[in-house]
Amino acid sequence: MNAFEAKVSAVFSRLKTGGSPENWIPVFEQGVAVANLRPLATGGYTEADIALLTQWRIENQHWFPTQFNVTHEGTKVWLDRQVIGKPDRILFMIQDMEGVAVGHVGLCSFNYVELTCEMDNVIRGRNDVLPNGMVLAYKTLAEWAMNELGAQEIFARLFADNRHSVLLQLAAGFRRHRKIPMRKVEKDGAVHWVEMEAGSGEEPERYFLVAARSRRTL
Image (cartoon, rainbow, N blue to C red; front, side, top):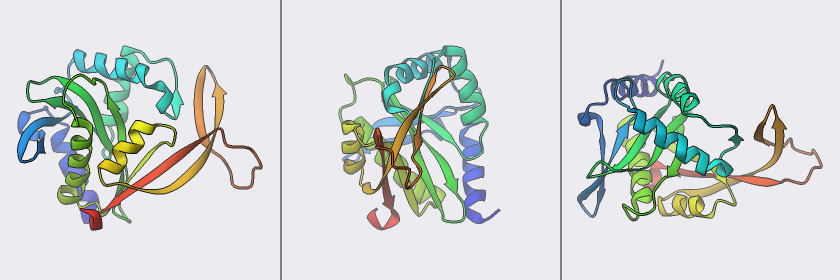
C-alpha cells in the first residue's frame, strides 16, 4: 500500500462513519459558503436520502451505462455494499445551507499507481434551488480530491449526447480527453452500454466522452 492508497483509505473510512457535520466539505462561491457535500455514511444517511437517490436514478436512467428496474430497497443495498462498503468509493449528497438536497456527486475507480480517480454518480435532482450549484460542487470535490487526497489527475465519463453534463465538465475545468464508441446490449430486462471492440466494423450507437483535469489546471 503506497501513500496515496493509505491516504484515500484513511480519509474515506473516517468520512463514511457516523455522518458528523464536521466531515462535510463546504462549497464556496466568491468566498461565501453556499452548500455542503455531505458524505453518505454508515449511520449517517436516512430513508429520505434513499428515496431521493432512487427517484433521481429513475429520472436520469438514460444517462447511465446500465439501466434497470430501480427500487428503494435495491438502492439501499447498493449504497451499503457498493459505495459505503467499498474502500475506494464515496458518494456525497449536495445540499444547500438550509439542508435541502439538490443532487449528488462522488469519487471512484482509484488507480493508486498512477495517482488518478474518476468522478462518479453525478446527478442534479432539483433545478429550482442553488443556481450554479452543480458546477461549484463538482469543482470543489475535484480540487478536494487533489489537495486532500493527493490525486494527480481526475477523469470523468459521460455520454457525449448529455449536453448539460458536457457543459458542466468544461465549466469545472475538465477538458475533453477521448471518445469511446459504445453499443447497446439488452439482457435479463436491463440495458447495458458497452465499449465496442476496435475493428468490429459495427456502427456506434452512442459515444462515451472521457474528460480529464490534472493538478496543472488547478
